[in-house]
Amino acid sequence: MLNPPLNFTATDYAMMARALQIAEGGRYIAKPNPHVGCVITKYGKIIGEGFTQAGGRPHAEAAALAQARAAGHDCGGATVYTTLEPCVQHATSRGDACSDLLLEARISRVCSALHDPFHGVDGRGHHNLTSAGIKVECGLMGDQAAAQLQAFLSRASRNRPWVRLKVAASLDGRTALANGESKWITGEAARRDVHLLRAEACAVLTGVGTVLADNPTLTHRNLPATAVNAHRAPQPLRVVLDTNLRTPLDAAICQGGNTLIYTTLAQLASAKAAQLQALGVQLQAVPEITVRPNSPPMLDLQVVMHDLAQRRINLVLVEAGAILNAAVLQAGLVDDLVAYLAPTLMGSGARGMFALTPLHSMADITNLKITETRMIGRDWRIHAVVSPMKKAS
Ligand SMILES: NC(=O)c1ccc[n+]([C@@H]2O[C@H](COP(=O)([O-])OP(=O)(O)OC[C@H]3O[C@@H](n4cnc5c(N)ncnc54)[C@H](OP(=O)(O)O)[C@@H]3O)[C@@H](O)[C@H]2O)c1
Image (cartoon, rainbow, N blue to C red; front, side, top):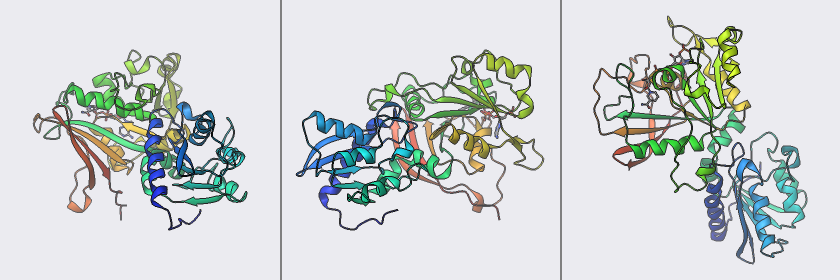
């Protein structure tokens, strides 16, 4: 990895800020590729810019070069600002590698925000350029780029997706009545916002308890026009954790394909498994582990997340009840949380957000860092990141 140089100019910052801004055009459509932004400048002016297109191709650099050429510009001697290290041939099976395209275009300088930890790149893009005599400087606005690409970086460097947990609750933190009824706690604006979360995610994960109680479809629909290209987002993979294959065959989530159920190896041989597969539902066995003493074993969430990463899932949105919410949190797998709080009170008899095992010390509570609060319709929307869980001593 290259050392960040200390002499970036105000123009460099302005151009990288622009690259970060236009990268947003790919947020909903580039997956499973990272949504990268690229700006090309010559003689102090922008001559081309682009972001990663639908399905990940063309890459941002290729899109920016194409735009510059379409406008009649020669990119020889230009500077390229890109929010992620350009790729190399090894990493790509479709189209030319971006570092080769930049070489062919006779670019003289590349400023990138981040080293790409993906095993197929991992420094080789920068090396390809520097070994051809191009000046490469890495680290410009790297923190901002890392925040923007956190889901892809999670898969590339941690071998698991970024896990976002969404919860809709009353002001007293209740997510369903004791009888399981929960439609609707929050207002229409908040529910539309959830569709945007689904559009951004590669997968939506729930438990069989929610499937049985709510019969959700977990697709995105009626997306607000304000989010650039959200309406072009592919539907997320719908994922259910279901140890005993209790998901009904006529459940909404079983219709239309694009559904994956994690279950046990024993269940894979059952008649119900065959019926689900005949509907187009994918099944995947994972081992069970004992998480709590005196409680039945549960599907191993670490294995689930690892398997999702193998399926090129960058961002998982957990939309589940208190049981699975707690299990994902206690496994140390939740990265951030979006809570919608309605101006209603449901009382202590209703279900909570997280069915955690009782804690006996304030040292054991989960700490969050709230990063954004805003009204959405009549409800509060709170975004928070989860501090790393403490390891058991
Ligand atoms: N307000 C909201 O934001 C919101 C969102 C979703 C749901 N809900 C409400 O939540 C209620 C359902 O919640 P719930 O807690 O009963 O169900 P849940 O959390 O959706 O699903 C829990 C079930 O998933 C299965 N599971 C498999 N592997 C697991 C693992 N490793 N960890 C945890 N669970 C695993 C277990 O059933 P098996 O042992 O059979 O596999 C478990 O009982 C409904 O009333 C629904 O309306 C509210």
